[in-house]
Image (cartoon, rainbow, N blue to C red; front, side, top):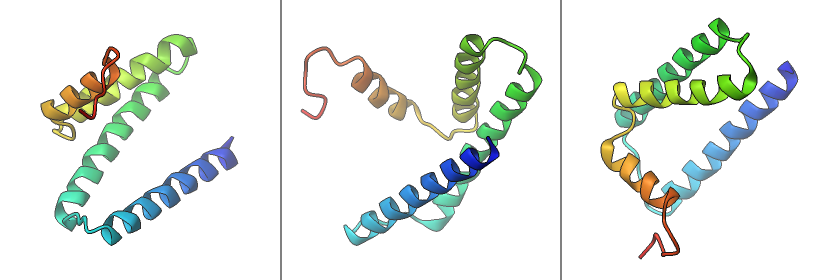
Length: 103
């Protein structure tokens, strides 16, 4: 399982690197301070979720995964890693009923 975790993390890093390079080439820039701040918020939320999973790992998987996802999202919202506007965009995209969300 450790090998799969490393490969998964490396794949995500490569995807991020390619997306970042593409966005810079397309003319989009991210300030380093803002990026590092967001990275720390996401990392902190991941650590809180990991502690929860470690502490409650005996729970059945169908219960553990949604609870861990809720804890991650709540922590991310609490540390202001996600804004209310971001949640509205996600909600509109998820619950769009037969309409073009890009319109």
